Image 1: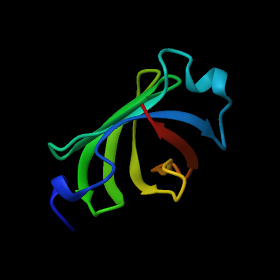
Image 2: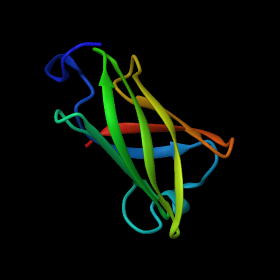
Image 3: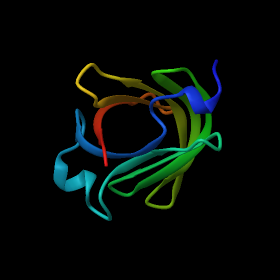
Length: 108
């Protein structure tokens, strides 16, 4: 892995689509987002889900194990985020209960 300073994904991203949820659910509580920090931490929120975790960086991708809540219930999983050719990112969330979701985000 590389240093955070070399990662092109650091910053705030607006989640715009998901394969499992419509836009109404994504923005239910607040505008859906993923924040990738240079401090080794990522956080995301969509619908009633909020979570975060420690990042492993590469130049055009990040990986992290996350923990959070979904309507007060504890949830956890893994995430990978990769930069697409069009400048958007693809977020793959794997929930420990077996669900998987793919989301697309654009830099804000």
